[in-house]
Image (cartoon, rainbow, N blue to C red; front, side):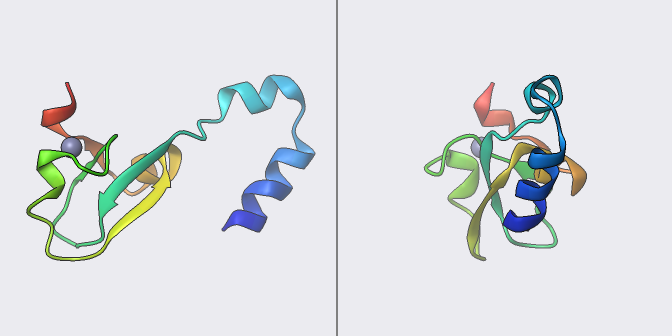
Length: 72
Ligand SMILES: [Zn+2]
């Protein structure tokens, strides 16, 4: 995944890079989880029974995740 992103960035110009979100978010690696979190210690992640994984915001939204209610 990292290599793919790197290749993508290399083939893009600067304008393209600014439109790509490389923000890191946290998600619970569970099929029932629908949210992403901005902080690893978020209240919404404390109930996670699975692994908490770090991914980019872009990847999170592609998985259909929406921002956790506690982050607002
Ligand atoms: Zn959260």
